[in-house]
Amino acid sequence: MRKILQSALFATLIVASYSPAFAGDDAKTPTAQDGADADGFHLPPFPADAHVSQSVEVDGRTLKYTVTVGTLPVRDEKGNVTGQVVFTAYTMPGKNRPVTFALNGGPGASSVYLNFGAIGPKRVNFGVDGDNPSDPAVLHDNPGTWIGFTDLVFIDPIGTGYSRAMVPEDKATTLFYSTDNDIKYLSRIIYDWLVKNGRMESRKYLVGESYGGFRGPRVTEYLQTQLGVAMNGMVLLSPYLDAAASDNENVSPLPWMLTLPSIAAAQLEREHRLTPEAMAPIIAYTRGDYATTLMKGRTDPAATDAMIQKVTELTGLDPVFVKRSGGRLETQAYLREVYRAEGKLGSRYDSNVTAWDPFPYAPHQVGGDPILNGIIAPTTTAMVNFVTQTVGWKYDGRYNALSYQVNKLWHEDDDANSGSVDQLREAVANDPSLRVLIAHGWDDLSCPFMASVLIVDQMPAMGDPTQVQVKEYPGGHMFYARPSSQAALLQDVKTLYDVR
Figure 1 (tube, rainbow, N blue to C red):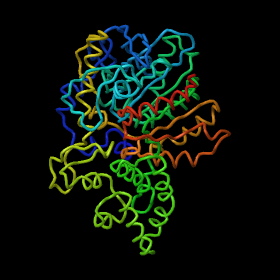
Figure 2 (cartoon, rainbow, N blue to C red):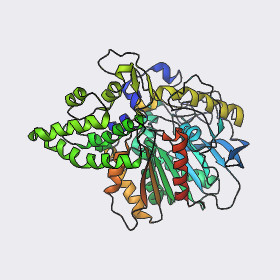
Figure 3 (cartoon, one colour):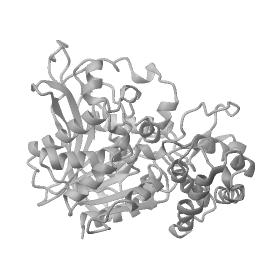
Figure 4 (cartoon, rainbow, N blue to C red):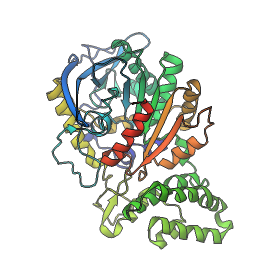
């Protein structure tokens, strides 16, 4: 399971040392909706749900919608409120409109990235080369929004956004910061929102990014089998579905097979040659000669020499570096090496997004990730202003776009290392009408696309091989930050939703 945390949205937070200053003075202070919790804490209430009417221009049409920022309680088996989940919902009038629930990853990430970067009606610039944290965090109409064909509910898990536990930290760690309990309470939040808003009969979809993609199949299967809510579809953006795939890198070729195609894709992009047609033989080589040569190890020196030459050609790296790596390109070493001559670092989330290396002579990367360090300020500023000023949900507490504290406290359950592949298969088998789109950026080394390709290719067809599809787009982990990739994703999503 540690591989999930290292490969999902918090890869750099795990590498970097934890800073108590980042967590904030109230990071360990439980807060609640009501006056006191079961342990006697007296806590300030959240505001009542707030609403505002807005509009967005999309394809020459003006779409009017209502924004709601509100809360839902999390209760224990005795009915005590143990936490409060804050959500942001965008709804439009209309008969038979679907509703889509959105979760980001981490663990420890709020849903602001999907909201203001990918699918919400408004967006703020982040995650692309040239974006700076100090740029004005101005919201503008999002041409890739899904609001035209589905209502949207963005959920911030406990400890992220404004959502909060109302129990002490040790109890919150047990109740909220574990793989299994996380799935159970978030599934119940979806159920409760549907009941509260009279939407149980609506078509229902789930979109999850990164660790949210890990959550997606587990939440869907839990809703199906435990809470009696059948989802119509899942969209998993840059998901990390199989924690064990990156294990045992000293014996298994799989960890190196997952990242080589993304490294090669980044090189093709730098050469302005990145296309699906150019990637096809690279994927075939990775599955074939590359994998078998790694399995042969030292028993076939000629094959190893040929493999190292091929990897050098695919990646554009220094032949000496590739040879000393044995053709096995460790991600962080690659991200320093590819831009070493420029004194820069590539991002794990999109290796063609760079920043200056503040410690170029250190034996290992010391600075943070170029994308991760650059997205916290614009997304936090935009969300705080939107919630408190535009919507009028007047709350002055800390907004956690990314919570180091949640990630630090996260712990794994016994089956966590199995990922979500079992639940993906079971959810699809349970409902032949369930449609799944798995979407990746070619350049993502955090959650590489090759993992999902291999996972889906090993699934039984179960009647319809198109029921689960993998799509790739130019860009990285947040490929939707690129307008052309966001537009391509939008068309694939409309097909999934059967938008005519």
